Image (cartoon, rainbow, N blue to C red; front, side, top):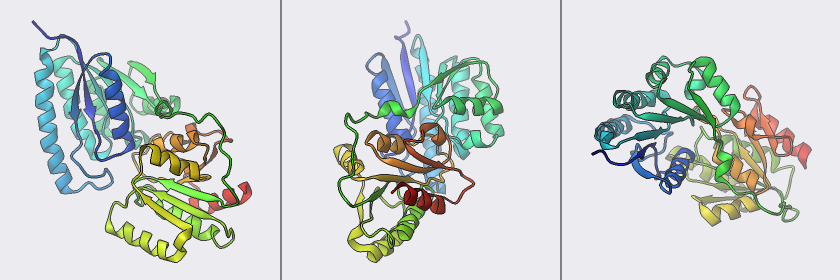
Length: 325
C-alpha cells in the first residue's frame, strides 16, 4: 500500500543566507503545517556569487543524491514537487529534476525566482520547461514577470502570483527621521554584483556637501578584494560610516529603523524581487534601486526611485537624494 500524500521541496536552504534560500525555508515550514514535507536541499555552501569548479563538483554530487531521493518517493500515493529553478548553468540540474518528475508523473509547482532565463531566451531552459508542460503549475513574483516568461516560453498551464511582500510585516506607525543626521543604508552580501561599490561612490559624492550625512552597511564581504575596498573607504570617512556585519532578526530591524534612504544598486543577473527592498519599505525607508527583474513592480512614487538600467545609478541616485532633502 502506498503512503500518504507529501510535498518534496527542492531548493536552497540556509546556510548560507540569501533571499531565495530564506524564502524556500519559509514556504517549506508553512507547507509542513498542512502536509508532510520532504526537504531536498540543493545548497552546497558558499554564496551564489562565487561559482568555482569546486562548487559545481559539489553540486553534481548533491544533484545525484537528490535524484535518487526523488525516484524513491514513488512510494507516496500522490507526490507534489515544489522547485525553484536555477538560472545560468544551474538550469542543467533543474532539467534533471524535471526529467525524474516527468518520468514519475509527479505534479510540479515551479516557483520562478530568477530573471536570468527570462531576460534572455535560453534553449536549455525551454527544453526543461517543456518537459513538465503537462504536469506543472508556474508561480511568479509579479504579473509582468509571468508575461515576460510566457513571451519566451509558451505553455498552457496554471499561473499563480505570489510576491515577496508576503514575507514582511508593515510597521504600524510611520517612521520619522531621528534627527538632523541623514543616514544612507545598504544591506546585502557585500559584492560588486549587489552594488556595494556604487553605494560607496554615492556616499563619496554626497558626504562633502552634506556635513551630517552618515552611512550604515550590513552584510559581509564575499572576498578579500571587496573587504580591502571597504577598509580603505572606512579609513577615509571614519565614524561617519558604520559596517555592522551580518544582521538578522531584531538587529536587522533596528538597522532599517536607523536608515532614512536605502540604496540597492544591484547588478546581479539572477535578481528578481529582492526581499531587502520590501523589508526596507516595511520599516519606512525611502528606497533607491536599480531597475532589474521585478524591482520596478515593487515601487510607487511614494516608496522611492527605481532608476532605469540604462541610466548611471551613481549620478541618478545623487540627484534624487539632493532633490529629496
